Image (cartoon, rainbow over all chains, first blue to last red; front, top):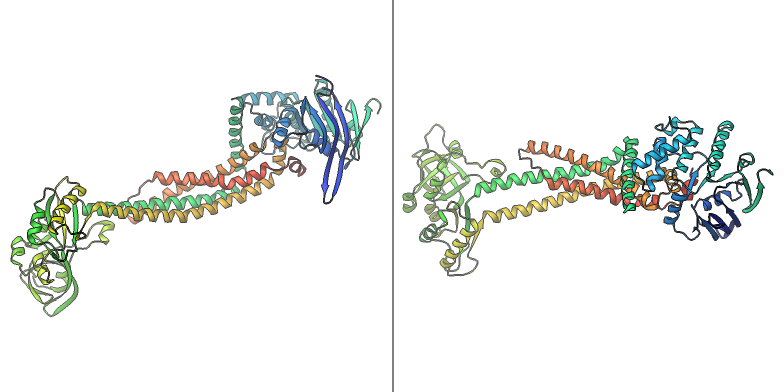
Length: 232
Length: 402
């Protein structure tokens, strides 16, 4: 794959209209990633990092600029195509795990495969494998409220990985966890990264960000390279 | 092909998730489907009951008038009705077994100082008594000699016997009908028709020879008569034969007589039943619409409550149509459950009603199909807007509600 074909953002602007005023949330963002990289986007609240996450996660399209993911131009896509890219290429991990409360851990992990049209037997096999990989082989039939916060986040990670996406996109993955559990989740991320999976993690926490091998900072909608974590 | 199979799998999964959702909200789901249930119960009950009643009405009418035609004559300027010769000629037709003239009216009756007005009198020919052999209870029937002689004899109903005679044998006594003396020669019991049809027919109080009745009415011709058909003759066919003969009698002048067959009456009945059913179904469908609005309300609430779930599913790759199908299936199933419960309750209720009214319970497959399909349609129709609302949510906004 040629350079920039895996992940490339070029001259990305995102504007919002607030009444008569136009607010520039993101200003000329340039970012490129190679496959297998582990990147932190570090920024305080209100810096535009959530907007950037929405763009990276194909939940929204930029006002201007170019976004290429695995060779596909995202910026001009319609809602249906965006949904397709989300399902195939992106594994979301949210701050509060965001499991569906009415479904068992196993069913939660199967859900992305349901929308991808995978057969029930295949779905179950892959979801079981993935739960075993995050260390929850004994908790598959538990409902989310029967699991601890750390276990719930592991289920969410399994759910993010089960569709074999191009990258994991994590939004404050340890935000709702105590320090010890947060550390365990970070170790799990490390393992996943070493297996060659691309990870983008968005956080306001310098310490958590330092687990990644590359950090970019975003302040007032402007992105700048933060250097290697070894420097930080 | 692969994609199609994937979509079918997805839809099955949606059904499973919807069932879980409905089960998870038992009370709310039940209250919601109650509206549809009541509507369908109303539809089924009304339709089954009406068709049960009309079925028993029709069958009583048919048994009453099986193998007969009724002819009423309005006459032309030259000929006001049929003479005895005409009747004999008609009675000789292949399809005709016999003819009984109907000459009826009301008159004042007096006997032994008692009088009663508006008593029903019916003039019949001897053939009538040949057909109604079980009618007579005592004495003798009127016969053809009475007809020919224009005799002043009568048969009296038990009802009239109870009114006028107390401790006296009425046979051989003379009663005054409209001032004319008649000798009582026979008695007969009440011949009430059975079932619902009984309400529409009651036997007259006095029977006299039709020739005598004509004379008392100052008529010289018969204007109304019942034609009894030979076994196995179609009423349409007989009606045609009769019409041809009678056309000749009235010199092919138009509109001199009307032949009413049982099928004409049946058609009228069917039309009435149809109108009744349509009207009731219309009323019942209002209940269904109200039920539908209940479902719509519940679905709109659900969509608002589950914005987060919708957001997560969208982030996991659910397309808009997949979200829409999921909510549509949910309202469809909810409505269908209501419909099925309604069918069960409706059938039960109409069974009870039919037993109470003494009519036969008719299982109407049409009503069941109508009830179920109507509720399915209501589910889709009223679930459409909420499902669309869910699918059009912006994923960012939906996720922001986290």
